[in-house]
Length: 105
Image (cartoon, rainbow, N blue to C red; front, top):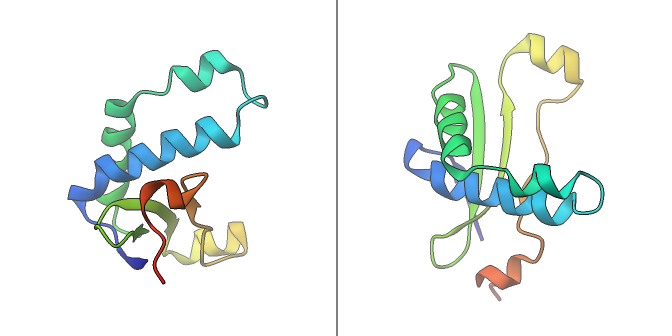
């Protein structure tokens, strides 16, 4: 697995992981109607906007095939760090990253 700073061309992969991880993680917690209404194009636009922000700190995890299997997003400004008491955000991954051919020995 490789971790690197996200680039604008990563928005499709990030949005895909975002939607799929929510659908598996929050199934039975959030209404099915909400989860099924998550829109890939809308998420891509949101992520593109996020990546263009001045203090953006988004990283992606890639498998051996260069596919995005996870991401972490945060902000690199002192106000956000004071509010959230952290500099780093956790990674979000596909439920089973091995399903995406990500396992490396």
